[in-house]
Amino acid sequence: MTTKNIKALLVVGSRHGSTYAIANYLSASLNKEGLNTVVAYPEDITSLDAYDVVFVGSAVYRGKWLKQMREFVDDFADEIQTKKCYLFSSGQVGKHPMPEYDSAVHVDDILEKTGAAEHALFTGELDKSKLGLAERVVAKVSKVPEGDYRNWDEIDFWAKQCASKIMSES
Image 1 (cartoon, rainbow, N blue to C red):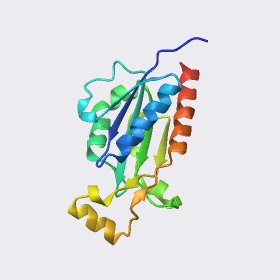
Image 2 (spheres, rainbow, N blue to C red):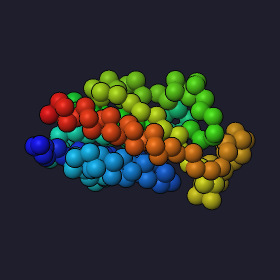
Image 3 (tube, helix red, strand yellow):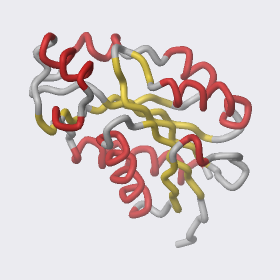
Image 4 (cartoon, rainbow, N blue to C red):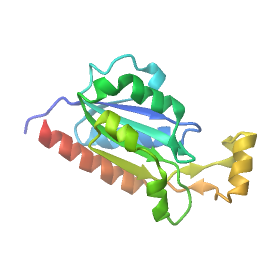
């Protein structure tokens, strides 16, 4: 069996750390499948030249990716389009995923700009102790449940699917 040296970058925007933890978990899963991964914040990226694959992920607030991630996509769109690309979002919390949540996450423009193969949506975590005053008010008014709703098995499954496609296409 030949080993392929596929380098993958996971660029992530995370306001309170939950999405960053997802990126680290994805990275570990992808590494187990034979990819060489690096996790980074967008402000640490100056070039994508060293990578074969780019995963771009963001926390979602009020249906949108974080501003820093939208700006990263705008700044690197041309480079991203020359790579294999996968997107992921996290943000919904609660025990029962709401079907309408999938359509409430606005990534169509990001999919178009990046040419990403797909977009995965993961449930997130809410630790109210990490929130600022305005965020706590919104969470209270919206009756957002506190807790960790990330589904690590689902994240691992997606990573394995992506790695399989990447390895078969390389």
